[in-house]
Length: 383
Image (tube, rainbow, N blue to C red; front, side, top):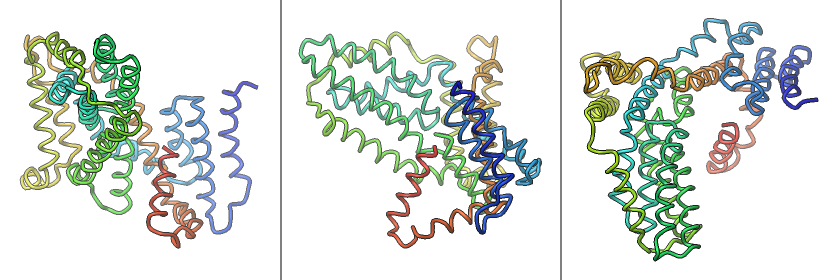
């Protein structure tokens, strides 16, 4: 049998088995059904026999049908306020990419820090990490790789470098871009979907709001520490790059910047909106909320997105953003986010979270380090 067909069948069968079997001791019947739904979704997510966003829609059908949650409670998770924070962030990121502002920012950061091989790598990492704070990790990596490859090609042609040194530098730079994109995503709420899933869960279940600035106060230092550790490990331990300078690499960055020309009118406007948005996110509680108490981070993001559809480009013939530009944002991630919040809500409503917690009570006798390590490894594996 074709593997695709097999996985399509296994998922529903795991769910159906929970309808006919008795739940384990102390687990509620609804919790057992929820477990079956989660197993179904996990099989389809891992195998990707259907698009992951489509799998994320299963709770809308299955939760009300099995009395896990009613349709209103389930559907509300797909319209959670943090989804609108993501929509605004995605539109802002698309505007930055549409007018190549991201490339200018990256090249300038690399140019300021470039020189020796390890500094060029540090420049790439800081540029990638910064962009990944606002743009998805994948999009940031895809954008940075052509720039990195261009520099690597220049380094290969430099007469003062050994062939083996070129190869080592190329490997280190490619890994640096990939790792720093993940590290940068930790820094802000919109950096990567798991951040908002956690914030949404805490808001719904414990009535604790994690603002954009509150997240950054912890996320940004952790992100910076991780990036410098990755840089140190790649350049001093894993590849042990020497201090040889790569003028060819720096000249290539200058050439790319020269080809871009001076900063355009559109780039200036987007940079202004981008800067104001960040400042509003950071100082919202101490400024905006004094005048408009209920104005939150999601409303700031949507406001910025709307402004981008109003501000004209230099020619005044069309705005900075048109709807066809927004259509390309990853709507599937938003559905995935809604599905994740629905599952989290179902865990609490059925008591499945308490049952699983009781099965893991043995961990509480371990050290705090073991508890955190277990939770972190389990969360990373599931992600």
